[in-house]
Amino acid sequence: MPEITNDERGRRLFQIQKERAVEVVIEKVRRSLGTEFRAFSPAELEILKYILGETWVAMERALWERCSFAKLKKKDVEKIIRIGKETRKGKMVENTAVDEVRGILDAYI
Image (cartoon, rainbow, N blue to C red; front, side, top):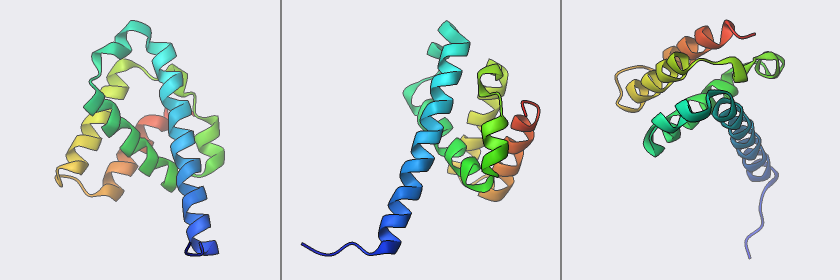
């Protein structure tokens, strides 16, 4: 069995932390939106997870933790998904997308 380097361990731990942070946010949004959350397709939720994950990477942890994700409105979630779609299609640079998502989230910090 090949040995795992410390760098590989570190990258995997970082990825797990990112995924967990995003899962927590998705659950908060799901609870707060209630039945409105069902309007999002599985594909849209994957895009939401992707762009939130990239935003988590770029954001200071203290700001991420202070953000009241449970207060996000459906229209804000739709904007975030739209930004993620544009990024995935190559219509928006990832750094710009993250900045736009942070702009939305700043209202909830």
